[in-house]
Image (cartoon, rainbow, N blue to C red; front, side, top):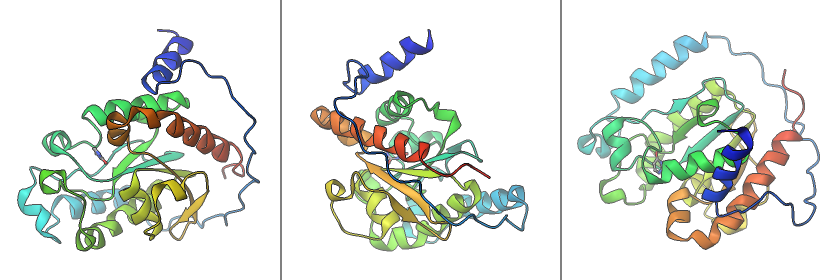
Length: 232
Ligand code: URA
């Protein structure tokens, strides 16, 4: 399949017929995040240690119901990092994030802005599946979020895309609605990593009429990324 055909298929999955900007979107001013100091420890050691911690984690009761933890997948020195909510049944079974129907739409959403799924790092706020796919409890997030923070420090992405209310609220430490968090560049962690939020693909599967807004968010994220200072 040609690149153009692949892009058209991705846009089709997003409910977008063709890539026609309806109006100019203001390009945000270049972000002037401080250049982070190089990591002292080898990131290989850091990844191995973190993977072992997550694999053996019993910090909250969710470990009792899991088949396995879902650490994250993708490129470990990625420019883009995707953050979702928590593993579902299929992710718990396979040990990989976003492998169910929502994962297929996520792949299409990334492809629509020219990102191959394996070129980004994908992780969740929670590494274990909550029963019946209920929302994560605050005490579960409190135990698990430090793992995500360490992943962000190891990947050192230039931009984080937060998919859904749970990812957005917990990354940003806010109870603001997803709608009010869209269209703005937020920041996460000691590296001040830019964060752009959009709808969760599972929500978009239930509410396809919202795909247009998600497409606006993805274009915004791409513009923010393009406006970042050159990588060191
Ligand atoms: N939903 C998520 O938020 N994460 C997954 O890994 C799968 C579905």
